[in-house]
Amino acid sequence: MSGIFEPLVVALGLLSCVFVVVIAIRMDVIDHEAVPLHITFSALIYWPWLIWEICKANIDVTKRVLGLLPISPSMVRVKATQKTDLGLVIFANSITLTPGTISIDVEDDGHILVHAISKEGTEGLEGGEMDRRVTSLEGTS
Image (cartoon, rainbow, N blue to C red; front, side):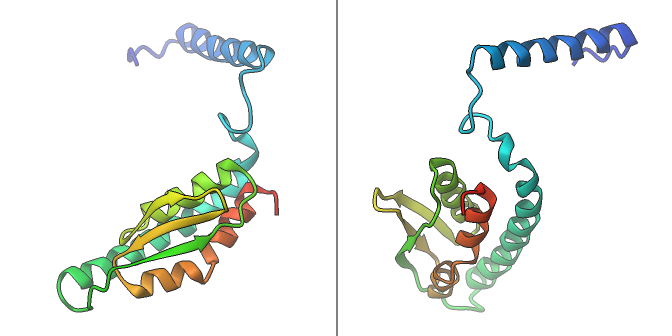
């Protein structure tokens, strides 16, 4: 952040980063929930799909705001098939990131209460594509 890119300064910075990671590993403070390294490669496949879904939902919400499509708010309980808390959080956050839908509650029985701007939005969630992809992402399927 200093703007100084001399080899010694960069090398010392990298060395200090490695040192901190080694200490954190030895202290056993790195786990799958805090630093989910095990999903890194799967996430590289999931993120482009999620970004595309966000773009499509943006277009849908824009049409509804402009009056080209009707707004029909609805709430639905979506079954989440994820086995870990991390998977549930990724699924609920993916729903919220998609315009027109918001996760209201993650219930103990494995359901997520979702509010959507349209019935079509809830039908898309009930189809299970996002749920299937997040379950695949977490790697416990």
